[in-house]
Amino acid sequence: MSEPMLKVRGLTKRYGEREALKALDLELRGGEFTALLGPNGAGKSTLFQVLTGLFAADEGEVEVAGHSLRHDAAGALRHIGVVFQQMALDLDLSIQRNLLFQADLQGLPRRVALERIASGCARLGVEADLNRKVRELSGGNRRKVELVRASLHHPQVLLMDEATVGLDPKSRHDLLAALNTDVRERGVAVLWATHLVEEAEQADRVVVLHQGRLVADGTPAEVTAALGQPTLEAGFIARTTRGPGGPAPARPGAVTGAT
Ligand code: ADP
Ligand code: MG
Image (cartoon, rainbow, N blue to C red):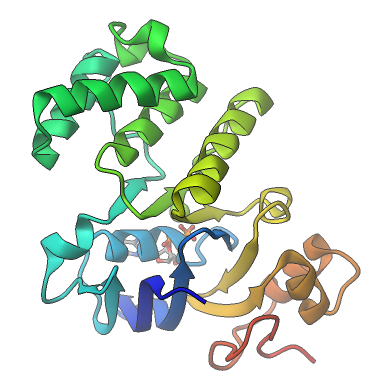
């Protein structure tokens, strides 16, 4: 099995007294689409904020493609692309301007940037709108532009935080299809945060986050079995409407604190 693209060890993040992440361990391999399934408040967005260097963890280590986030942040972040839960495009700039701004931040030569913007937008079907203001776009197309932006530097790890909330089924399908192509053809590791069980059911792997801890990890079928209910949805509801379990599971398919 290939080396993990992302390694998280013992990650703890506190907001004052509240522990949002509790000694979290997680590894992501290239070529795998992993759903991070957790109810509201589980710690999904906090994990993304720590993985992208927005917040420092109180304890623990993150490595991306062999680069320590603590000791070589630039090296680590070069391999990460992210779409945050809150849309972060400038509404009054065109798609092209928003994307060029990001490409400049990444230090991409202008010619490379223009090529990647054109091909990325074509792939997601927003190329006809390149010169329109983001304000004029549908929610689905805004999310597509955000995925193009997150991918401009060809990261090996893509983090998507509740990216399909509020989208129509076609936009949701297009986003997932584009990401699955990245996973299969470019060997990207995708971490897809969601509270929607039906999205997690389509992933290669599901990790269930509850109150800052991973409580199950494996294929959808393994996690369903480990949670001890007939469906993933029933298991997820049962497991995340009671208190925290012990430490994270040591093997795929394991579940913590289940009786
Ligand atoms: P999720 O994305 O899974 O809904 P979050 O990471 O947003 O979860 O939140 C995890 C926990 O941390 C929640 O209890 C939330 O209220 C708390 N929290 C999140 N952000 C902050 C913050 N900036 N300050 C204080 N508490 C926070
Ligand atoms: Mg969130």
